Length: 234
Image 1 (cartoon, helix red, strand yellow):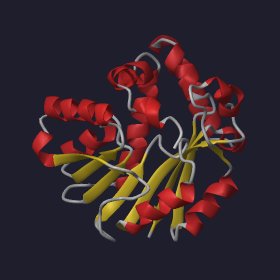
Image 2 (image 1 turned 90 degrees about the vertical axis):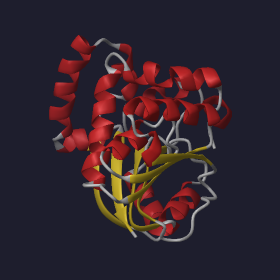
Image 3 (image 1 turned 30 degrees about the vertical axis):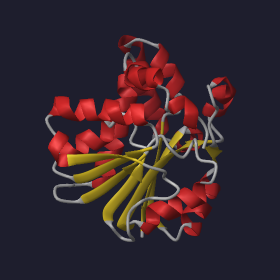
């Protein structure tokens, strides 16, 4: 798994949200949360597992909406940030954070209604293996995102601390099929890559994002999108 040691560093966990989701990065945070909510729908009393939950952005959000949710991550410092976030939100007693390996999930078959992973598959060295495990413990839905090979993401990928695994559309569809899942739908977004938004203030990011969204609705925009959201069923 790429970046495994990097993500387990305490200083990385403490600065993670501030570095990625401040300034123009707030637009990324809002879009990703909307993607998750659109995919999973009403979650009250639903059993949900988040893989690679990190600092708990989505885990806490879904707990606030009534989900019976578990967040799993390999990084102890990231999980600690998530627990503090849950405490501030008043949902500490309604969710569980667990340290574990996504390649060997400590749950029985069909244990959850929905299993999802955000910001995970770009680090995966064996995506079929991870997706198969997600499918095994879900009895209904698996949702995840990828960064796309034929996009602006590829232009600066080599500058990132550990790089990213980039995927083509056909490759993701094969992985979904190999994991025994059925692809229900997919969305593609962010012609302008994440790295740009994180570097600029809100007043610059807002207009750029408006143009980005408009372009993304065209065939050219969908082809050049840097991020895809994949919704599959068991």
